[in-house]
Image (cartoon, rainbow, N blue to C red; front, side, top):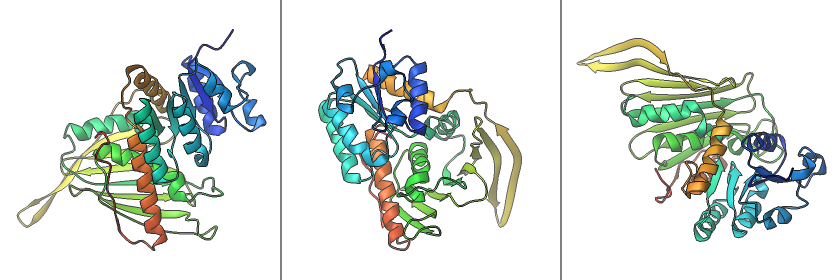
Length: 333
């Protein structure tokens, strides 16, 4: 039977194979391509394209999903947009802020949907946490901190900031609905000179919120934890790889005269639907393609994450110097 989907998938590495599975389940996979013959063989023969150009020339390919190495994202995304295809790019969108802006501008000119695969934003817990914040149930957010730690895969080229932090930067931009005004990052290289293994990034936001992000691939255990401190309630999200847990804590401290009064009413788990974030993410991309709408993590959001990564990396190179950051006023909030 001939393929009936509309999406070409570029890249069949470990994460690309996850996209392959979900796109196949959704009935949307039409073609695949990977320059590595061993990786390419993962896909069935009837969907293997001989080249990226061949896949882009297929009139029945309406969209392209890119899960190749980050260094190739810009060229592949640009070629797909120029070919008139909607584009989904795994995080990060690219490695240079100027390239990110160029892709956003090109998508606008071509009238194409451009979306970045910041899958953490589509986790049911993050979606529920965003609803809690927007409804004011936490009160005014004071600060947010995130730990993303593991004795993980050490990348041969990128540092821990570019490898781990995109998830948390994307989540913070989404949850707070605004970009920071100042960025400061410190860290250290233990395994290889000039490639940080551990970083702590401090973010200052326009309305007084502070963000603190700790990432490391040189840690004795795996931990993905996000904490939001509000002046009414607090929230914790712990991703255990099995669906995760979101808890709203009715705790806090209030100053009554000269006395600090503690409130300790415990925590309430938030029920989460058993939905796979990647499936929600790709379904959202396809829905945006159908409706011609800006995705939740559209090109502007993805480009802003790249600028944030670049700024934090520059602060790291300058020994932790605080640097100003200007967000994109066109990005949907």
